Each structure stands twice: as structure tokens, then as C-alpha cells.
Image 1 (cartoon, rainbow, N blue to C red):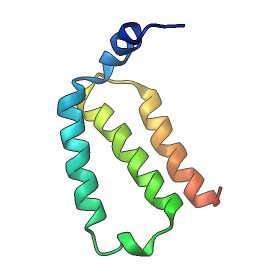
Image 2: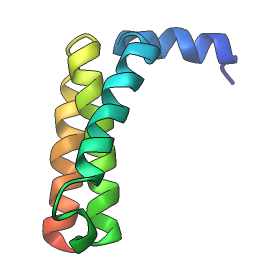
Image 3: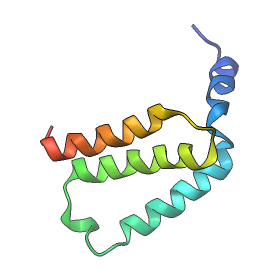
Length: 82
């Protein structure tokens, strides 16, 4: 099992947690205050939250294709109704 320090080191490829968290929280605030937020399902809200997290990793870390796969996966789950 990895130590916390080893896990944090592995995740450092996604950039500064503090900078990324600020951007993600600002985006979530804007999304939650948009006109349609109250009209979408909990699954859609969760998908949007997870997509914001992945977008933060794309914008504040180094390139990792798996982030784009995850974004596509969350969107696909909503379209499929899973």
C-alpha cells in the first residue's frame, strides 16, 4: 500500500491542488447558479461536478488522455441513462 506521500507525489502530475481547487470551485459556483441547475437530475449534477474536476486536471496539470476519456465516460453515462 502506498503512503500518503507516495500518493500525493503520483497525483502531482495534475498540478497544484490549491490552484486547481480555486478554479474548480469557481466553476461549480457558476454552474450551480445557472438558470437550469435546479431542473437537472442528481446524476447530471454529479456528472457535471466530475467533469469540472477532470477539466481542472486538464487545465492545471500535464496532458493525460485518460482525463478526456473520463469526461466522455461521464457524458455517456448520462446519455445512456445509467
